[in-house]
Structure formats: structure tokens, C-alpha cells
Length: 289
Image: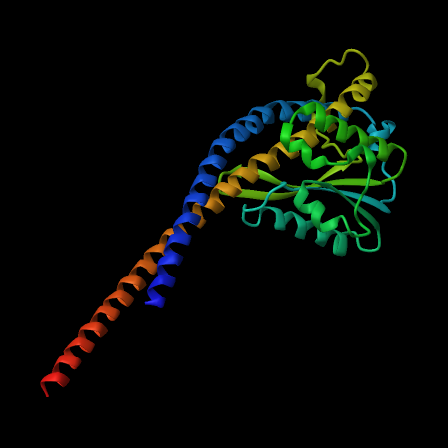
């Protein structure tokens, strides 16, 4: 009977786990809807701003702008964007692995620092020489508690200031881009220096007032802040999609395991009853004999 008790306990434990994962799936689904709406509504604005900059850059030498200064990339800053919590499949591990690959392969021999936006990647890199410690960017995981453009803009401003004073020669964003609830794509996106796409054929579609340089000096910093905000928004939506999918799979797996355990329990119970009947019959025959 001890075996039956053990199976009953496992059935109860799996049932409790299934309730938790099902609840987490529902919570993530609700959060995903809001996060998805936010990032999809922002993409047209970001796309139009990028289009204007491309047309502007087609007829202007952006090397005159400090944020577009091309120099030998000896000091690299990788901005790794993960979540603060787990239970979202390979969402965080994929970013951590990509950052590790960039350090070991793409930027081998370079001085590489990692700015951790998210507790999961910070837990991995905070005790390594690659960890980028900055008093102004402490507790960046709090960004997700109140994800607003103003807060992200402060992070972008600090990164831009570090680039201008040549603390870093190149800044790269590594994050999960939201595709749909079940799919996220890992993006490795250059943040600084700016390398705009030149599209000279469309450069005549715009009349620039005030001067082009005034627009560059005003528009490019705003564009970079928006680029970082969009990356974090993408990651935030992708996180909830990944967690919803992971919890859906976990709930299905728990349901299948529970069915299997119930079948095992019924078989064990039937075997126990059969053994008891055989013992009774055997005892009765022994008395009759």
C-alpha cells in the first residue's frame, strides 16, 4: 500500500503544479496583449523616423555628427536585454549564449563590457570582468516595473555620453524581437556609431527646415533613444509570449503525467486487490485442507 500512497501524493503534487502553470499562462496571456499592442503601435512611428533619417543621410555626411564617428572598435559595450524572471523557456538563455558567443568569437581580443538590462543576465555577468558597473545605471531591472520612455531615455543618454567621451568605440544591442506569441528572434543590432542606410534615390522627397545639420543634431539622439526603447519593448512582449508558451506546454505535460500516474495508480490498486483476494482464497483452501 505504500506504493499506492506514493502515487497518490505524486498525483496531488502534479495537480497543484498544473494549477500554477495554468494560472501563470493566463496571467502572461493578459500581459502579452498589452505589451504586444504597445510594441506594434510604436513600430510605424519608429519606421517612419528611420525612413526620414535614411533620406536625410543620403545627402548629408553624417561623419560630421559625433554619434556617427567611425573609429577602430577596441572597446565594445554589449547591451544584453533579458527578463527579471524565469519560467519562460529558452528566452533568457538564448540572449546569454549570444552575448557569450560575441565575447568569445566576434570580439575576441577586444575589451568587451556587458551592460545588463534584466536580472537574469546580471546574475550571470555580475561576477565577471566583463560586467559593466555604472552608478547611474544601477538596478536597471527596475525598468520593467514601470516601463516608460522617460526611464529608457535616461539609459540611452548615459550610453551615448559614454560613447562621446570614448569610453566605448562601439555599442551593440542584443535582445529578443517579438514576432508572435510563440516566436521570438534574437537580434544583434548596432546602436553606436550610427550607420544609416543610404537611399539617395528618395533624398529629394523632403524639404528640410531648419538646416539639415540642425535636424541631424536634434533628431538622431531622439532616434537612438527610441531605438533602445523599441528593443526593450520588443523584449518585454517577447518575454510574455515565451512564458505563455512555456506555461502552456508545462500544463499539457502535467496533464499527460497526471493521466499516466492515474493509470499506474489504478493498475497498482487492481494488483493489490487481486493479491488480497488470492491470499484470502489461499488461506481458505489451507483451512479446508
